[in-house]
Amino acid sequence: MNRTHVCLVSDQPVPNLTTVLQFRPDLVILLVTTDKKAEGTRLKSVIEARGIPVEERSVEPYDLNSVLEASEDIIKKFRDHELSLNITGGTKIGTVGTFQSFYTAGRPIYYVDTRDSTILQISPQESRVPIDVSIPVVDYLRVYGFNVENYLKDDGPVFRRKDITGLLLDLAIGEPKLLGALNYSLQKLENMQYPLDAMLPDSPCIAVIAELLADRGFAKVKGRGYITLPSEEITVYLKGGWLEEYVYTTAKALNRGEVRMNVEGKWEGRVKHLPKNEFDILISYSNQLFLLSCKTSDPNRNADGAGETIAKEYIYELISLGDRALGLFGKKALVSARVLNPYVRDRASVLKIPVIEGKNIITLKSVLKSWMT
View 1 (cartoon, helix red, strand yellow):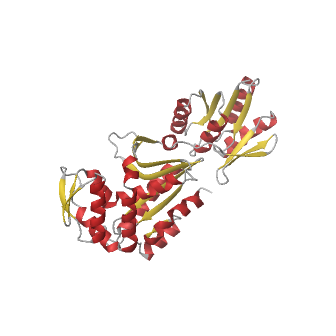
View 2 (tube, one colour):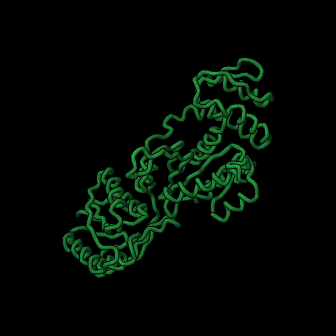
View 3 (tube, rainbow, N blue to C red):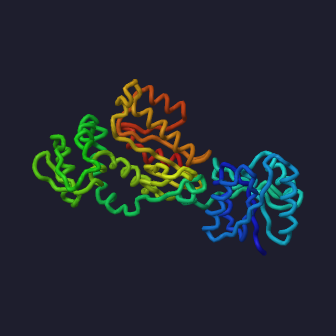
């Protein structure tokens, strides 16, 4: 018997995608209100890319009769199918109308409880099953209107310099001023022709890092304090990319869900040549997306000459990108290699943005575990 699954399209498409991927129906019907056509189109394209046919039915957002009529028509047309409804999402009118029709017809009705990572069947019998699918990062972002164009695909170099990353982590924890000096020595070396020579801070720890980079083929040591950088990639790594790599390898070691680094792309829009956005680290686990923004520059440095620190920009950037890309139940955090000032820390707390800073970045693994429990 064919299985047909009905979903209510809303601003939060992930619960719909969750039941579709878990149940794998033969057909999905999307009830799309006139003000959610773009959301319906995105959700339809992601589902169809999985080989599942999709039909769209238009309903009025606040017209109960329109919803009832569409629901009754579906129940009648697919009376010989295993027909079910995902009640998560939609307007209250849409929820009431579809629930009434499917409940009266004795058809299964489901609700996605993202907080507890379960799918509830609320009618005709009550039951609860764990969510056992993970929505890929690309699909998760796509249904929210972000089209991924690129991300790190070869992480071999990341793992080959993992021990060097560990030394830079030790530097951030034990000698943050030296880390600042390293950043400063490299700040004008991006967007230049490579290879090029650079002078690093005179420090035994920095010398060990340079020697290890040379030993792995990532650079050449020319003498005390001097190094030849073969590419902008290594400059970016030394200037702060190492923290993203630390977060990436830590998340990968948990072996939970999909981990992506340096995810680039653009938001949908009518304006041509929209600027690109980049997410440092994204983790898709179950039906949630986790965003970690990684910073190594001095968070207390004046940003605009008016007393604003760049750490406040970090916070606002996370809010802007995170709220748009993660939906209601995604999580976001700021990982700073250097300590924030109390004002910014309190501001982040008010905005419910976890901060992992300074010496506490070594607790990252336990933080991620608690997120995913």
